[in-house]
Image (cartoon, rainbow, N blue to C red; front, side, top):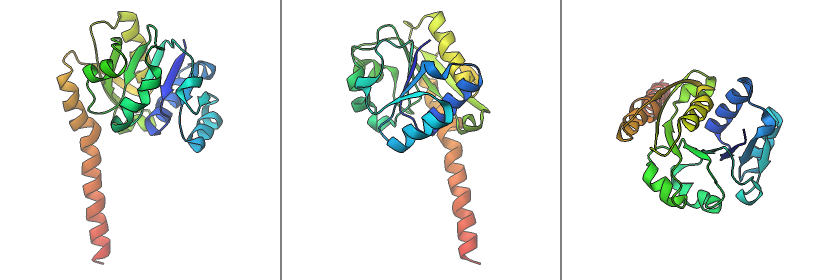
Length: 191
């Protein structure tokens, strides 16, 4: 199974590390990452193949994981339009619905949208997933296997509920921790 990651940040690192630990072959994983330091870290940590741009990545992967920031997604996926074949596209970008992703991917419809949470960074996450109707049972199982590498998965039939997953278990706790850190810093500043 050929898997390509678009983006090599923290969550991509967690997924790749979990996948390799679960028995995915590092030689089957390729990462498109602009940052040289991030590419070097991925190669050293997991032995995966890394590319500085999409033009060097393989066409028609089995799985494409979109792991770039939502505000960068449209531009980042543009070079991949027409190169996906029947790949299942897994997006971990918060707030981007599957309609927009499909449009940006030239009408590609084998899309799974998911929201892992930060405990995935230590292999203890919970990920909510939903898929377009065009995603086959086999593709759903492949997406599930990728996300189970960092914890438990829960399938949601209504895409609108992914925003709730994002707010409650994805981004919400980060704001709570930020608030707690601010209180801690205020206490330290006050002596």
